[in-house]
Length: 470
Image 1 (tube, rainbow, N blue to C red):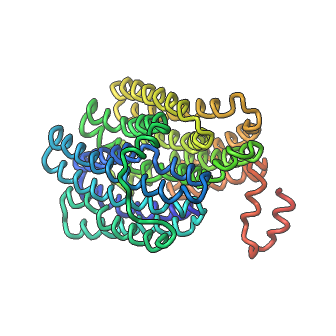
Image 2: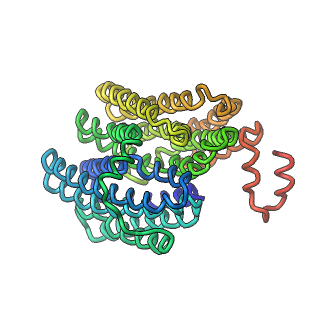
């Protein structure tokens, strides 16, 4: 449900991206994405895993401890976001320009509103009230698109676009407050003593989140430093497509985190089952996403940037491979979190950061934006594989079945066949690719049988499908 609503929102945001990139042009698009990257680093560093750990702790702690913990987390998140926002605004002013610094400052205010909203939404996540969470996330995307279209029509320059998150954040925060009011206190607490106690326990995980944040954003910063403005524009256009979709694997895995956390505490048989099924579904979706991006890259770039961004097509295709790997990697990342393996998470994150920085640096010098995309994809695949190994090492009950791997690989190869059918329009090749991918999955039965029970009861022949295919 969360993934579906987000994908609808992503399609809506495609409209705003297409208008925005055409309105700003290649060079200004690069500055826009650079500003958002700086603020996104603050967002992840100010969170430092607080939301994820908060979900884990509140899922497993007694009722009496949940309220005070959420208030402490809110106060800590507000403080860190304010400090980080001031810091990146200063960096943008010194390293770039006054104009970019003003835009970064506005985006940081929007980030502060989102930080508060994320904290207020924790009870909704723990209670698996994912319908409301999905509705708020979708409304955020719709409002962002509406404001973007309005500013394009008004002929706005760069800075106002970076301030869109402020009105959007106010509305999303207000809706969340209405939903949780009466079930928790909305006031933050600022206690250094309690913060220090909590942070000392989760310090390795916080450091891992910091490393992961840099790992995700360092590619675009390295491209901005080592490549030309044109190459940065190409990488930014493809990165914008991927950035919209990177939340999807997180939503898929994180929605099950309360279940993972309780099972990790009480029942490793159940944890192994849950991890295995989410791994299989994530593998299928990740492979389909990678194939679809490879086939549909020309259309996506044409919509977002137009003919001047045509060189970004292969860049987007390679970044799609990394996104597909992220679907699988985040399942195991949440497995590590549910087990409380904070130090292992830290070591893996640092290793991934170093590997990504080295690969992108070497490859961007050799092949510009395309080289950077290849480097990030390779680093993502290796990082996800390492996380899986750490989770299952010494825990045989958590080892998933890998029999689905060759079948999904076969489906992916079938889905790539339309790439050679150049006379067909891209949209036709994209639909054909999905059809071939799904056909191979059905014929080989390369999917968890539980998925069949998601077919609505009103679908004709549902019982026969479940009986014959399952």
